[in-house]
Length: 208
Image (tube, rainbow, N blue to C red; front, top):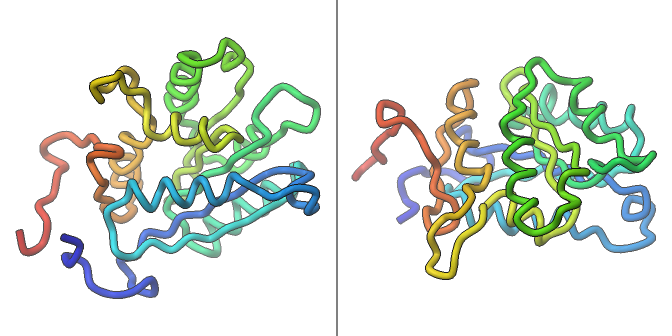
């Protein structure tokens, strides 16, 4: 059940998540952005919490604008997790990783390594992805791919025909990372993404 944490989105227990879609054309209205809806849909299925607050931004591939959006979501909005989609390839306009590194206190290279491992199961061009993850203050910022299918695979991982994990998704490591940087304790829906924590870090649910 989900009755262990009372209060609506304004509750101070709310998990605040920033979603940033980076695309010149989508931000200009040339075509519909698919990144933000895909991110939000997956996160709602994966996070077992009654109060999640999403802060959405749709912005062009301009490094100062991306940096400003990331700073705002962490420093002013108080997001615990910020996920970006788009702008991580080798093309001239792909500068999301540079903007992300520019606002970083710490770099978390394991996320990028794992994302490329997952994507390499599907396409050899995963080698061209430059996604990074960083910590800024009390927030984890992760660059995700641009395609909804790739976003889901990266977060959830790859399973075989029987549903057993072949390559773990990166989201399994996200809740414990947020614990370590002082954020809220995030429960996950295990059938979607089972959060991994050391035994000493696992909390029992209230009322269970």
